[in-house]
Image (tube, helix red, strand yellow):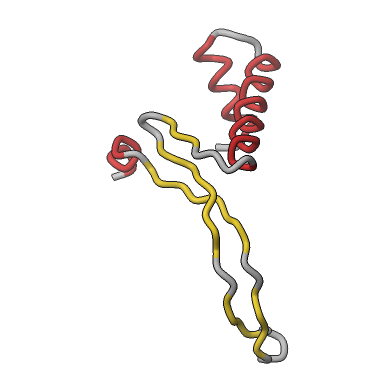
Amino acid sequence: MNVIELSEVVADEAKITKTEANEVVRVVFAKLGDALAEGEEVKIAGFGTFKVKERAARKGLNPSTGEPIEIAATKVVGFKPAKHLKECVK
């Protein structure tokens, strides 16, 4: 499912126009991104938790030359699914 398909489902379920649903979906994802950018944890009941994690610097290999390189520390978004979501996927 992509954003357009999600917007169509939201429009059908909420009985609103596809344009309105697309805007709602866009705003939800934008606000989720904003909260994560500020370092907040985002918990959605029955779905899961998004949070920013620190990935430490590490050594790696350049795939072209095989030379050792230093991979810089970075931040990544982690997701832990809720129990209900895990059960839905089984």
